Image (cartoon, rainbow, N blue to C red; front, side, top):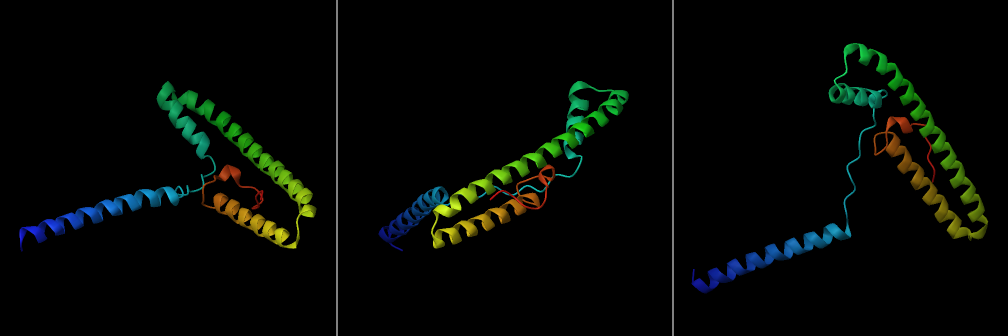
Length: 145
């Protein structure tokens, strides 16, 4: 192999590598990846996490842990109720918004809005059942569109 052809091959390989890197950078910016979905949290996970952290950070005794644990469980139940209540309120707000907007749309736009609502409902269901949500957000199986 002559030195010219060897240098040409090395140059072509380097140019190919650089072109691939540039395409990768622009591709990543143009098509950002979605974050990996988190599995839903188990019931009691919040209070257990807090108790574990507090036991370590505050050097809690077994007696203190026994007294604090039911308090954390009660708060976790309250927080879960708040999440469910807020989800219902948000769903109602979106429903009212759609009812006000619907008369302003033509037939094709109404169809597109309905498709959008179904897509958003599917997305919410995915979040609640293994996606980015958690079990404290498990409500009626429906979401705000």
